[in-house]
Amino acid sequence: MALAARASYEFQPGGLKIALVVLSGEVIFDGALVGVTKAGGGSLSTDGYAQNWGPDATGEMIFVGMARITDQNSGDGTDDKVTGDGTLEIEVDISGPIIKNATVAGLNNINDVLDVVYASDDNTLTLTATTGSTEIGIVTRYSGTSGTGDVHLFPFITHAGSLIG
Image (cartoon, rainbow, N blue to C red; front, side, top):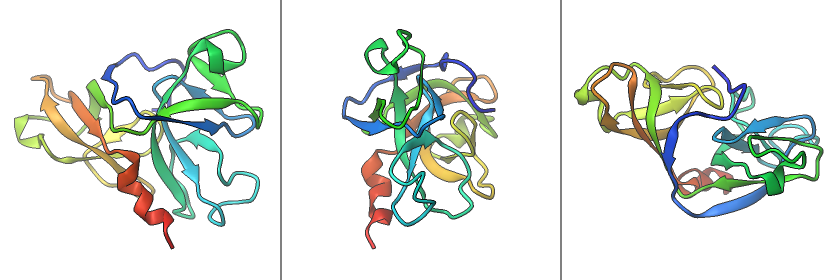
């Protein structure tokens, strides 16, 4: 299910971040998975802006990383979300952070470690590829509880190759 508040999971930051302008009207919470529609792929009104990760009918949205929101970039004095106005920027961790104790559909035992993880929105992770989902990382630890483990997100450079021509 898409985020409606700051993500409550713990994560291990990777460190490398980039600043992206948030699409006007888009609400991005701290910890959300973020994508950008590459130029020429979506519509001129959305190309190049940070958006919550979600199925893209054109297949042109590229997974970038995890939003890191601070009160300095939220624009409203809070540190849990940014509501885009076409000028506000967010930091996105593109280095491949690890989401600890993430909820992952289909993660049922230790045999699932190193399986590919897919995302269908900014917070829904699964081991099953579905229409519109994208590979965003791998399982690196099974917690011992069905449906929970650590997910190492792929660094942005993994997806950057699709931007080239």
